[in-house]
Length: 387
Image (tube, rainbow, N blue to C red; front, side, top):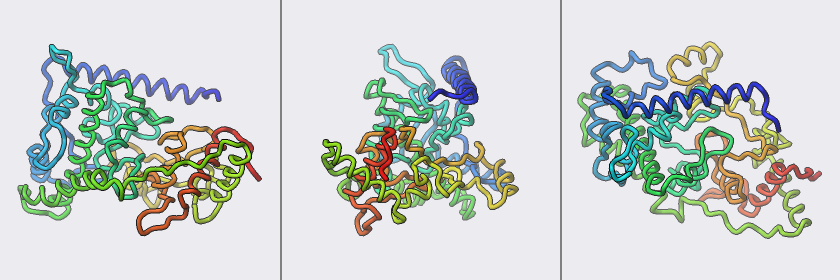
């Protein structure tokens, strides 16, 4: 399908912004510049609601725990590799042995921002926005609802990219650099959730200053760390491995699976039609859909939405359900990828988990999910819709 002129124009603007920002990032490694700091997370808050004393206390606690963008550190109990973090952090450059530094600023900061807030210099012209890591929510995972991704999930996203978005594949990176970036993303996520805890403690609960660091570790940092460790340690309980796909090597068998998949897709319990529409074109009855990063920006009235806009770095962005006919699947287009998206859902979005979980039967059984996968793939391939 040819790209329309408005799309090409937007793409050129985005590319220009990215190239300009990349130049600025690369230049930041030269000369003497003021130390770069993590900005305080004031998303959705009136800036005046956080006093200078409170802001200073939160920044001091976060620096004591996690260091700075140039010199990251992690408290005891956070299982991240400091050597990898040092490789990912800091200004772009390298040493005499050819070891790279500043990988995050070289590859990620233009879109994801210095603090991982998803509001880098290029973010405003991108749809969807880059991921904001600070809430610890990642969309495309193999883990059940409510669970953090396992490392393999982050590797898959980094190596494959996210089709249909500005997130490219980084499969060209040496493995040590890729793993350093993954560690740094987890670092930003743990730091970001700790920051949210501190804002609640210091600002919302008006706790005494400076914050009790033992309490911050016990109630803020360690529970977040445990939430990352839990699915890695208990993969049998928390991680979904797609069962073997039934053989559909004969045309009549595949046609029967597609027909069954359409029947399940249209069933009320599956809730597919509500967002994706009866023809899988993304034209369902739900028109006002927002992900968890945009919901706080949406007021009850247009006037409330306009008033909220000044409290966020990026404007409100509506979520568009996938049009299966285009064949572009952000979480991957392979049968196993689609199985996971249906089974565990897409975290942070209205796409629910439809598969079974411990103690929860779910609207679709594993063999039924495979039928829906075949139906969705038939739409993407332009196959005739079974009647």
